[in-house]
Image 1 (tube, rainbow, N blue to C red):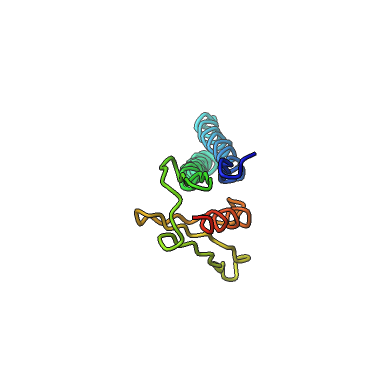
Image 2 (cartoon, rainbow, N blue to C red):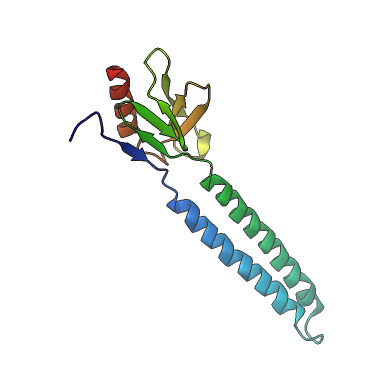
Length: 155
């Protein structure tokens, strides 16, 4: 195969986001079901149960909706990157692979504090000034970085 025509596509790994979306849908249905069930309880039941269960179901449904919306928003946050020796496509916008003097690739380590391990983020600054942050938990950064460096060395 001709190395100048080789195209590599890097799509973000988002399977965990889909898991959280389906979990949110299940929690939303559970919250609505709890509220509907509690409203249909006979009036002879304990009043605290008749008042608290719909309230708890409502709170659960609100939290589930926030979980769903937040993860759907995150699905659209990470671009698809396609690289070849001469062309780079980020999120559907095709541009020529810039020369080394026009292009800047940074690999930064972002600390998570005491909450977890730090992760590397690849920052791509395109010729139009747009910066794309590609975290290592969503992309194969070592392979991506080596391909970008190789393409920049050829230009």
